[in-house]
Length: 325
Image: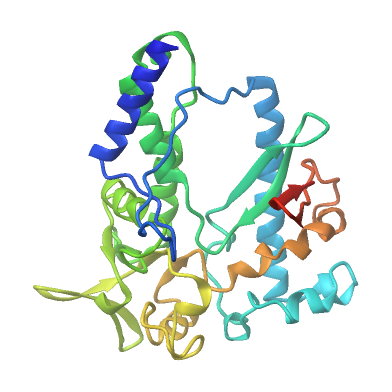
């Protein structure tokens, strides 16, 4: 235990040295909260992970199909698979995004989720993250710190490498670029330093080699998005966004937004810029959608849902809030 405490302190020091934070809005003790990393790994057996992996791939594919249907033929609504109210009364459903289509077959290019072990001992999926999924940067930082503090883990335990994910991400983003441009200009759009995952925005943009920008750094002119630079305007081909859906375009979405790019949706309609993930993707984050995933899966994929979804209820007691499954 003494050795574990020493290594845990070393983890804390390295995270502090690297400036790893997770900002908390309206926090009493200030916005920046130090990132916490447990020194004891959470182990998942390879055989169990193979089943989890299948379930996550199926869920990502399913959500992509649901997203395309909601902003397309809307068969799920017409066939009563999903209640119409769940879509049209959903704050994540953005009508201006109805005719915005990316040139790739998949619209949902990045997907993340929250998981926990259910009462049956199996992993359950608790939440979908689709509008601006985060976590991969923190995962990379976690792996880097653990490799330095616990070097014996690299020698005695086989772990899947993280680099194939980031390589695949770069390759996918490159295919979204202008067909006439062999080196597409890619920018990483952040809301700014007050965002809860701003550390990750800086970390990932640097790691992937993309320019970190805010909405004020971009402008729309002649049907294209341009990056303001010292040398003049540079045309932008791909935007990886961490700005929430309704803040992306003050012309067509939230009018008081200072975080987005005026005219962005129109440029997307013209096919002159790609956005990962496209605005409007938050419609499938709705918790109410979880109850209809099984039927949607049978309708769209003609197969049963491989991974259970969890539900939870917050109950207020004299001691405070309790979370119950």
